[in-house]
Length: 124
Image 1 (cartoon, rainbow, N blue to C red):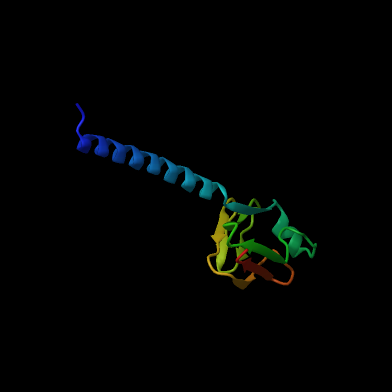
Image 2 (image 1 turned 135 degrees about the vertical axis):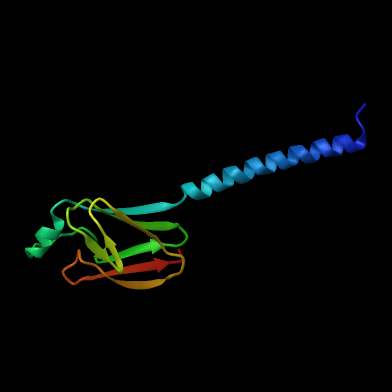
């Protein structure tokens, strides 16, 4: 015969296991809600920019959202390194940046004729 203590312990264990399952499901849902904005630098871009050609690889201003858990990804498929902010991105490498505070960030960017890239991070 089951004692009251055993039944209570069994119920507590089932609630704990069920709660852990809900927690894992919720965490997976939160991770899947993240958004990656990916920009790829095609081969030959640095040479074309050096020759004075206007290229639209990155917009002048990139808008990111804290609520959307946006992550900026810049992949360098060129044979020359590029620079975004203080970061040098070598050929075949990629740069990933997630912002945690709202604001406007002005960065050096060798992919723009103006050498400037603006990142605007909003709460929404």
